[in-house]
Amino acid sequence: MPWALFGEKALGSFLPDLATYLPFTAGAQLYAVTTTGPPLDPGVGAALFLTWTAGLVVLGMVLFQRRDVA
Image 1 (spheres, helix red, strand yellow):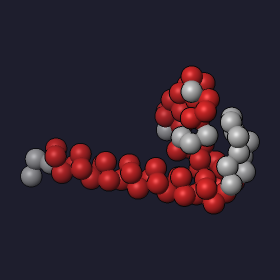
Image 2 (image 1 turned 90 degrees about the vertical axis):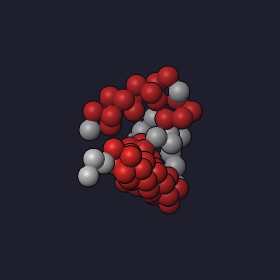
Image 3 (image 1 turned 180 degrees about the vertical axis):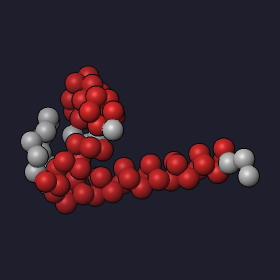
Image 4 (image 1 turned 60 degrees about the vertical axis):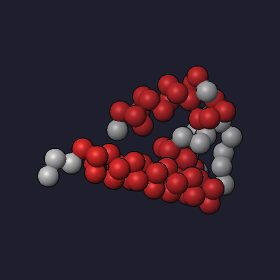
């Protein structure tokens, strides 16, 4: 949750062109919430949010398998 509140806003202020494509901003586009940067179509926001989610799940699975002690 701290990433959604602070990290994404801080990164978006340094890289405003990238801010629209960050995970929580893309998810907010599903509800047409006003965010920084140009608005995305809700379908594009959903696809982008799904891509972020799938990528983070795969990263978590890889890290879990590498660090599993059992």
